[in-house]
Image (cartoon, rainbow, N blue to C red):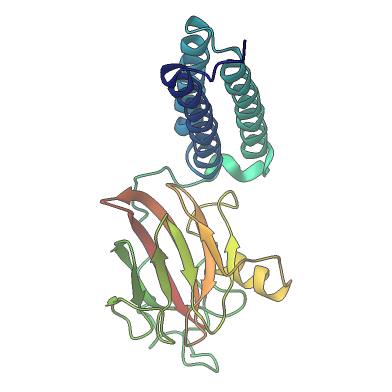
Length: 259
């Protein structure tokens, strides 16, 4: 007797099982990438989701899918532990990081220029602590701005002007997926997340540039992260991501100095 071909119902069941395995693996990979790139809460949620997936697959006796989910669970747990260690040991000054969601009040620009001799750039020679490296760094712009997805901002003229294309005048541009780009002319973001609060940021940013510290033209940004950058006109700037907002947007505290 010749071998009979598998019944259509059997083939459909096999295909469904393969499709479920693929979907489960992809979901685990997406959860892992998102967890590493985002806040620690995502790591916890990812672990819970993967643990539930493992339990479900074991209950359905899908051992191969359960094994893949278990591996993803272990990898995500190891990644979360490593990320926690990096954040805890990044720098001794991490305890002074500005709390997420708070607004730091900037010291007002010096108004005693008549009583204090002016330096070569016209700024008062008596510098505010933590601003600039030798002479006072005059503030061009200091405020909180909200960037929506696919939106940029130009602050070189002392006010926030929204831009909707990455042209030569854009100082910061928020792309899809919370990817923040620095200006096209300078293309450098220096991570300042654990270096300290806004007071002292001007001196830190100057140090990063002078030491040619490793930077990136763009970076994934989440709540609490801080970066130094250079505007399209060459002014040094500092930013702190206060919070993610709307559909792919972010609220950013932004300060730019005239060097």
